[in-house]
Length: 496
Image (cartoon, rainbow, N blue to C red):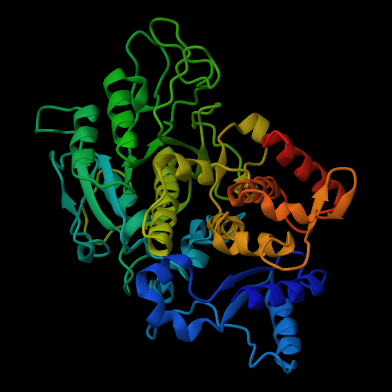
């Protein structure tokens, strides 16, 4: 196997220019599988190896040339992931109002949920909507089997119905389709009884019933005692802040409407004069929630006049012209729809749906969802769609699921795992009889001294890993100047 890897390492080196200097090599059966299966079951695969290159064209070219060699039995391009037989995860074509749901479209218009449906539909992730009332037997929601965790469905039923429709409207032949229609949905009410009301208590109740990776949407806003400012995010109340922080610490992703008060949250102070929502201020506190503002439905998306704004806002989405279930306010009809839902109430479910799809996709591919902090980082990163004038709008970015998924997959190709180490060890001559090469700052590639082999294996691997970590910051082909900087930093890190 060592000889085979050394030979294939030479092949990779020969074709580096053709494969954009990004090939890596790995055994067909990885170390974990070797330990699990034992020698007997994996012996038949010892003659196999896999070479991964940047794109399909490079793979086809390399496979053709390898297959023509007498010393290679066969070489071919392996087929990628394909869906199982049957219909696609989400078929919006038979949902008559789906064409009106522009927030499902590709960026910059929407979050590109339609593209994401090729990979996930929300399966495996719980979603909870916190507000005051819903019509759970609406014709486009009934089959979702939505239940109440606690509290009383008492007010603004049409509003809650509209929110649920954006996220989990059933993929059927009625109305529209939710962003994550296969998510497991529940609700929790701020009305704890018909006469008592508590946002904090509702959050605590919901979090107790949820699992790490699930997504909790806070469809609420508040006013603050001692302040003349109008509607604010609910986390300005201490008990609510603590409840959100507790949920996030438990692994639950919390999405919070920024509120419709047209406030600059950086300027707002509580009764004690503290700037609790101004990032960077000495009094700033981070609940961990993803806070959402409202933008126009037309691209480029501008902040709508009513939306709160400021450095605390992570994301925005459509705050107008949202097509969904219910009448958007107080109605209880089981067949009503609206094309004019909006506000930060309309924007927050869009971001929530994006979070659910991201978590569902990650759980399916790795077995575990992302942490709340990682979800917020991805949804608010510069990969996503900026507003028309970020410096003035100050409502963050609108998630672009295609960009996020593709970047995560790109990053995964450069994880420091066995396949990368194999490739690096071959290039460094560590598992080949011939001396290897190493990139020396200011000199470029130079032969490795034969005594290199006597250096402890751990030290060699630490150097390789250090260089690889630095290389992850660069996309595409690395120039000699970039390699110089990478190697120099890696050597400094190791104190050599």
